[in-house]
Amino acid sequence: MRNPIVAMLLVCALAGAAAAQQVPRETAQPIRPQPSGMRSQVTGARGKAPVIGQVYIGDLAPDFVLDASTGAQSQLSKLRGRWVLLAFADRYRDLKAYDSLDVKARAMGANVVGVCHEKQQTLTAAMARDKLHTLFLADATGEVSAIYGLYDWGNALTEPGFFVLDPQGTVRLAIIGRLFPPDQMLELLKFATASLE
View 1 (cartoon, rainbow, N blue to C red):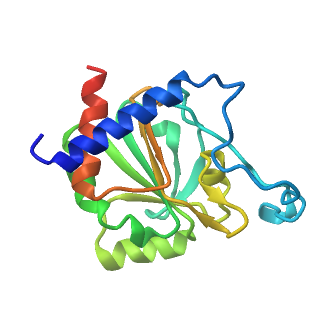
View 2: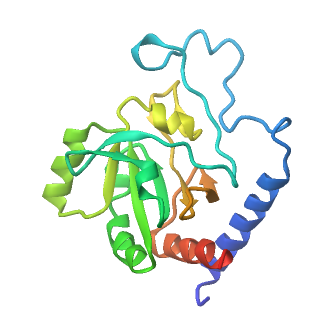
């Protein structure tokens, strides 16, 4: 690799992935634990208790159906058979730069899917206006982001993070709390796909 920053990120990602796989599920702490007493103050969509989830490396990615930027609905499990980079962000503009990544990923047999805390109309309009090709999914309630451990119910926003899913839908790489520039994400995707060949 030419870029030492990418190499460092890969090492950090591998160390985090290895550490995550070594932690027994029974003792693992939630990704976003809520302070005591907060559960009664924060509710999810439609007044229900909030969804709080975790996804581990090696797990089958939780399936979901969301409204897509194409104007239709999209189901995650329908993308099986290809690698998937599932990126989460609060707003689509945080993932807009991944449109160039999507073109390169498709050449590798992978799809880039962005999940945003936006309404479908916003994503459809943005796709047309900005001439985007990446599939964006509207998680307006935050419930899907919460299943993946990325929804902050207290601040009502989706935190950044991404998951690399293999063609069977198994999580092979996960980074919570940040996103990387498209060129570095491409290197991480190449690394994840090459590590299973």
